[in-house]
Image (cartoon, rainbow, N blue to C red):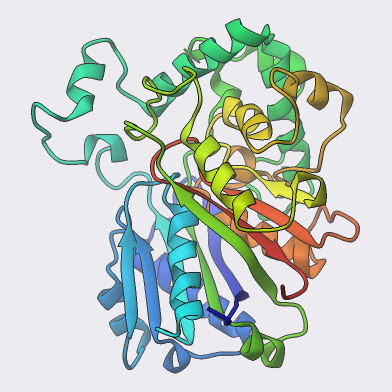
Length: 377
């Protein structure tokens, strides 16, 4: 395919602990803001993609906004693992010619009903959750804690190492007026916070958020006519890894390898860019260990070297708006907004000369990664 996709519009509904409104309304308002940002209207849209965890369907969004005809649509499974694949599907629809202007979004009202991991059907004898829960592995943090313990024992991680990640992300958030968390986080506060799932403390975990973010994609050719600073989709990849189940990585070879390793391998195969070319990173950060593991699995450091690298500050800036831990938790779609702002040069914590920005899914299934750039490929 010779066509290239670009993100030309970003929009958001304010992030909060309790919005007092519906997911449909938040998503619709974010979508309208993204379309205004792109200089487009709902009548220009002919593609709509969503997460399967999104309560508003593609047709409901199209009907509510007044989109006349949807020629490409779809939904991608799961939460934090599925947002990059969702945006990748939107890019693929543009690049294949199935659609000219695609809307994709994520809205969440965290207080509406049971937690997502309790909503995924009654399950059966083949449902791995039945085997995990008898051992107390009932929440995403439980699975991640086991993974974190494995890496910590293998590479001698200290509590302060994870604390450094949480504090770094919080400092970025404090420069972002949209971020939910504005107070300073000290190492003393981090170490003194309550244990959620050993070794993960309160501040190792993402937020509980209401809010929405929407993105508008179109062709690179049309993007140049719409605004002077589109974020071009340079490369993207999706992966699952073998025998994987959501957040669990009990079958990796070697043990502890996450699905992100497979997405990284596929991403670098699809582009001439390398880790050294990346100017800023938006890691999926539902939990601090995901950031550390991703730095290694995406090739930014050697095996077992990540905590030393982070302590020395010898790395690309990451999660520069506060990410899932300190800006808002919307399964990571807000990471795309910040990646676009970095490419545009409008971030509240701007990286000088940011040309290539990496965005990743969680270390889970499905999985994906995308590079946005300031220039077309």
